[in-house]
Length: 113
Length: 110
Image (cartoon, rainbow over all chains, first blue to last red; front, top):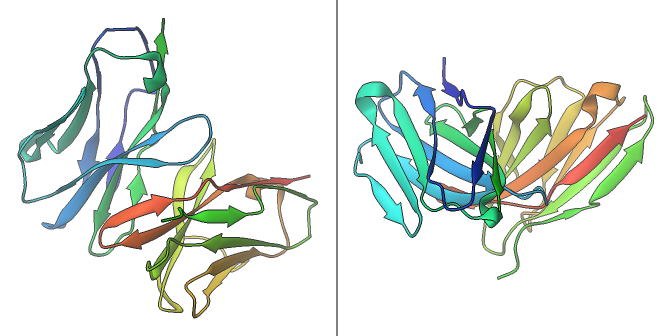
């Protein structure tokens, strides 16, 4: 079965701290795509990144970075020097040939000034 | 380009009623997907339409249905509403593998 696990329900940090959000996935498909979305209080899901199963290169985009490791089936997301505007719920998701977006339960990040 | 729009944004219904939600995708996007978000079940895929045909369907009862029109606009319908149908319903249009989400319709069933 396809599954995405985000074990961290809620994380609280103080501004400027680094924070890592964990994501572990399960799939038997060899071709799949992993995503991270941000959901601010307004409710709209904002796309952050997509990774396909054949591309294990880590990626950095500004203060955001992603670590994809197939050996541990993990796709972790790090925010460096967190800011109050980063406060949101973050979802990791998986898409395969057979299943549309399968979301994790989300991690609520609260960044305090 | 304008983003994905959903109407209405908020809706209150009573048990047993039916409801229709609307989604207008980004211009040029032919695929529309619907998701339900609840505190208990999280984000769950409902169905996907492409060129007026249902391409994928999640594990929801037959009370949940949808359709897509020739202009790619989509509607979803929930009949015989139950309290548990209270949720945020998100629509997403996609081009390739990236989905663009709308702001959602928050449905409250009393």
